[in-house]
Amino acid sequence: MVGGKLQAFLLLVLLSNYAVFGQSDTAGPVFIQEPPNYVDFSNTTGTKIICQARGVPLPNITWTKANGEPIGTVPGLRQVMDNGNLIFPPFQASDYKQDVHAQTYRCIASNELGRIQSRDVHVRAVILQNYLT
Image (cartoon, rainbow, N blue to C red; front, side, top):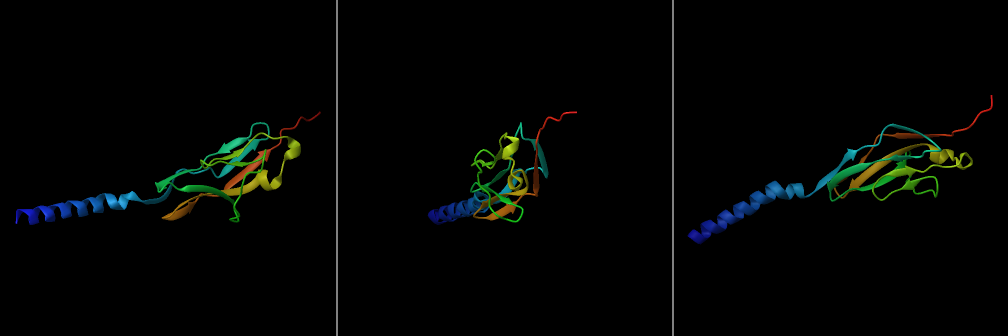
């Protein structure tokens, strides 16, 4: 009889642990740092837009245009980093591209339990120019 009670107790402990810990083994994505709504930067400085999310399993971070079209790296103008950051390096005024430097982006965080998207991120690059008076 003692063995049966011990088995029942151990089963109860296992079920209790599953109820407490089993459900927290996975979690849908939640933003840790959501990008700002507006990002203005100079072509001489560039900028970095940070998007970070947590979840279990760790969410994958991707970027899209506002219409949902996925974006990628444009050499010398835009870098999509593995850590979720979107980098706009300094660039020459002659390299300005409206579809890169005057665009609305969204950060997407997803894992097997869900998908969240950031607010619209309106990016605008300002070209620094010298004017003669």
